[in-house]
Every structure is written in C-alpha cells, then in structure tokens.
Amino acid sequence: MKLLVLFSFIFILFFSCKRKEEHIIVIGQTFDNEQNVPLQNAKITLYGKKIESGSWTSSYSTLGTDFSDAQGNYSIEIENIKVSDFKIEITKDNYFTDIAEYKSDDISKGDNVLNFRLHSIAYVKLYIKNSNPATTQDLFKYKITNFENNCFECCTDSNYTFVGQNVNESKKCKTYGAFNLIINYSVRKNNKINEFVDSILTTPFDTTSHYINY
Image (cartoon, rainbow, N blue to C red; front, side, top):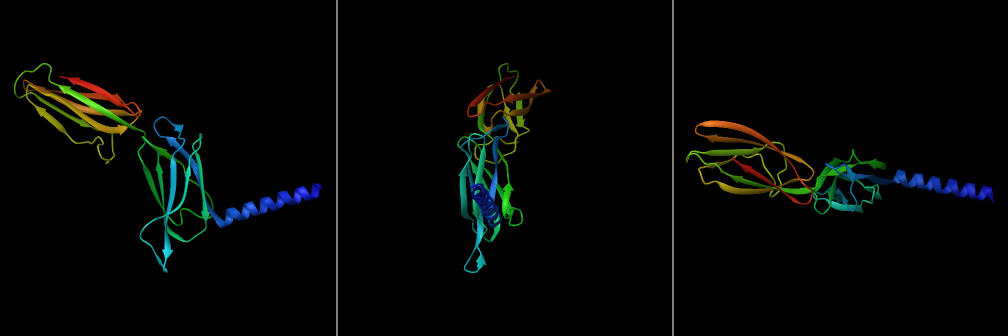
C-alpha cells in the first residue's frame, strides 16, 4: 500500500513537472503602487501575436485571463505556442490601466514571475482667487511639476497664467491617489514677484480641494 501511495505521488509530481515544461505559466502579484498593498480583483490579460496562415500577425490575440486574489496573486497558464510578441494588460476599476510588452524570449516555458503595481485614480481641484488685488497687472502663474501621465483629464506640466484683479478660477485634473502632488506658483503684484511651492496629498478615489488665495 505504501509503495502504491509513493508511486502515485511520484507519478503526479512527474506529470506536474512535465506540464510546467510544456506550458507557459505567468504568475505574480498586483499591488497598489502608492499604498503598497495587494490588489484584489485586478484583471490580468495575456495577449500574443501568433502565426496565422504561415505568417506572424500584426494584431494581438487573447491567450489567457485571470483575476488577482485577496493577496494580489494571479496565475495564467497556456500551451507553449509560438508567439512573436507578448502583451500583458492589468485593469481594475478606479485604477489607471497598466500595459507591459515583452518579446518571445522574455516569456518562456515554465514559470514566469511578473509583478505589477497600479496607481489608484484621484482628482485635485484647485481654487485660485486674487483675494487682495493691487492693480490690473496682477499675475498668477502655476505649474504641476511631478506628475507624468498623458491620460484624458490628467494633470499636466503646462503653465497656467491668470492676469488681473478679478481672478476667481477653478481647475480640476486627474492624478494618482495617496500621492504628493507638487505645484510651483508665482505671484506678481506691484512689480514684485514671489515664488511658492505647495504639496497636496491626494485621496484615492476622491477629489481633493486645494485653495490658493493670493
């Protein structure tokens, strides 16, 4: 009986190892980048450019999909097919999508450990008011200096300038959650220029209001 159990264990182990050798397995974890906590229910999709009609395709086909568990773990297993390029897309509601591309040599038979970090979505709304006007030449200029993402509605590093005594404006843009957004701004009144720097800690999945009265 003991020999039968031992043989069964060896048999299962052999074919498990054999399966790993013959399959491509992509495993890893997903995390919230700023809060450094595992992400549950993130969708991980593996794509590949396969051979069709004797030639490589220019478009990606879906090869496998998984959702991360409570510890952020995921696993995608596919047959060892010929692929020229791989792409992995990681998505989750209220998070920025991440896409990583790989050559065929980067992902091979057996286990491939790939971890990913997503940025949560947050918004910043700036309220800018000339609360102590001096002349019609009053000037306010600001720029966000530490955020880089070209998404729709995202904060940019563009300079914004407002001139006059009656400035009362608001600006809203998308950024990362739990992130210290840095804003440099200058104020000119009576031909005197003063420079300032504000740090805004954003709230994940919410809008953080920030008031600048000059």
